[in-house]
Image (tube, rainbow over all chains, first blue to last red):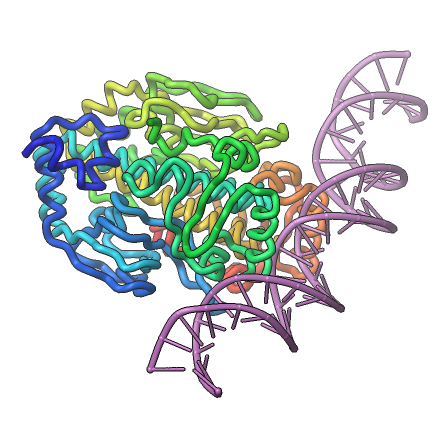
Length: 242
Length: 242
DNA sequence: CGCTGTATTGACCTCCTTCAAATGCGGTGG
DNA sequence: CCACCGCATTTGAAGGAGGTCAATACAGCG
């Protein structure tokens, strides 16, 4: 199993950024994503309270982690891209305290819990790599908390767009200055905790300042440095230094 | 090393809520908190960019995890209570992408990184317990994100007070209906991402509705059920079911 | 062609921030 | 004992960011 083969695998691509895996370990890890499932757009992958016996991993598409609110809405606490685990923590905590839903059609790997247990038990280095991945997620979560609590709508939105550019590039799904973003304004508003109306006005404002172009589900960033500066985006927390 | 001895240790108390440790493992873990350091109030324990060779754990007092903002302020992303690790993730990620500061005087255990490595390497069950702890922290972080992005000042504040009641009781630092809260209104405002002025008015409002009594650094909750209902607080995410 | 979901716009209102000033209060020195 | 200082708390007033409600435009699609 050569390096070339494994590089298609978004999990390996992601882990390569921070964990130090041997070729054998890379191969071993790549193989666990063999069993996959297709999930249509805007569907739940896991629900709150579930205690699945598989650990799921996004291989393709975009999904989100969310918690339902009493007012009928939902609060989105993470975006999941290829290479991200949906519910690795279930292996330890036992049951989901939140749900996962797709935005776009997704390919999801389903890894039996036993495989995870066996793999992490036998290969401390792999266990460490997975731990690394969850810690990076935690760092992203902290940054989202900061984004929500300190930045106003326009910078907040800009910050998200910057983060997605870096994260998508890390798995080969974005080019220099843009990427596909198949979210409706309403969904974007959900992610950024804004009303749809204000989301719309915010996007208009960013467009007027030539900070973004968003058309036909494609986001283009004319000047990445300028948008980053505007959002005060510092990518260190993503641990994806390229 | 009997159960009684170990129960003073807030780390063990906390882990007992979710991890399943043998008596031997409990003893082993209790012993790593032997070397301690006192830190005065309102001081940094670790700074951003540090790559300490010890892992720190709060044994007594209250501290916070924060990131400095470009405007000179800071954004607080977590409150650390006895039993909480300051920087367990440094053992994996290598360097701090945020800082830790005390609010009150704190007793902090300093555990050599090597000890952690050795302990988790030799005792998979302890490794799992520590992983459990970091996942609980992540759950708290998600709830904070929701708290910030969906609740208005009063419910947000109420939610924090409910969370602290449960967390402090889990380590024996709160009684049925209240606990010591030695934060100034300015610091509380920092935690809740509000201005001091609005923090003050929010507290007044909660007081007027008889939801809280906050006097002389002591918070009393006359009717816990009512405050919980008001904040829509559901303690499941803390994994501290008593 | 009408139907349905998304994007856009306008008007109004609330929550919260900001600025500024006043009040209280525990020290500390006279 | 009193004057004074520094700090936390409190109050007032004005303005801005964003929410809510409602209407309109603008798709794609059967």
